[in-house]
Structure formats: C-alpha cells, structure tokens
Image (cartoon, rainbow, N blue to C red; front, side, top):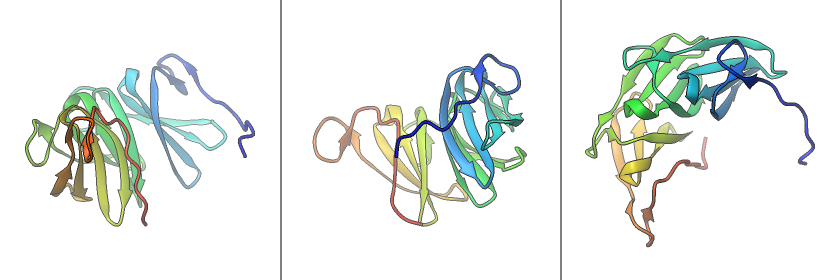
Length: 167
C-alpha cells in the first residue's frame, strides 16, 4: 500500500554499506543487492542485517565490474556483469558457478547488459548498448534477441530494465 517499512545500509564499502546500489532480488529470508560502485553483491536478511558480500573488482571467475541487474532462480543468482559484458552465475552462498557472454553484438554477446528477468525457464537480458533484449536458456545457451535502435515499434534506445510475466 506504499507504507514505509524500513531502510538499511549506508554509503561506503564496508559490511552493509553501498556505493551505487542498483538492483534487488529476494530469495527466502535473504535480500541480494548489486553494489555497482563496489563491484560486488551485498546479501542481507530481510530486516537489513548484513550477511555477506561476494564478488571483487575484475574479470576473472567470481569477479565483477559494475554489476547491474540481478535475478534469482532456485539456488542460482544471475548477475548482469555490466562492464564485463557478460552474465555471471553464482550459488546463493556466493560461490561462482559460471559466466557466459562476451563483448560484441552477435548472438550470445552483450554490450552493457543491465536488467535481468527470469520466466518460463528463460533469462531475459536488457542489452543496453546493443538496443535489444536477449533471451537465453538458464544454462547460458543463446536463443534469440529482439529489438533494434530507434523509437519505432519494436525498437529501443538503451534499455536498462526488463520485466516478464510467467513462472
């Protein structure tokens, strides 16, 4: 109904602090927040109590660079690793699983992925600078993309979020 419930966190890089929080997703009693400026994901309890972080600056396994959107499905966290032009996948405990995608405009490539959504066993990615939405299977297999740059029907200008209906 719009009634304020709580706020948590403060500016910084310590436990429970944020530098440009971007997206939030909830799994059970845990809240996952992409902390874009600190190149990590912060995990708290629903009441805001700090639990852990995962991710450090870089492009290797388990590293992130300006993480943006995130989505959770079962025991996996999917992260739009914006500046690395890929999707990083971690277990809920923060353990790195895999990454997929690379810089470019071809099938399975991204240029600044931002928003993520999961529905019907598919991951939808707002591919910001390619002006499109990409659809992948949850294992990272590319299926299709749609959209192009512009203001007409079926066109986008730097999409940053995506939402889908489904299970």
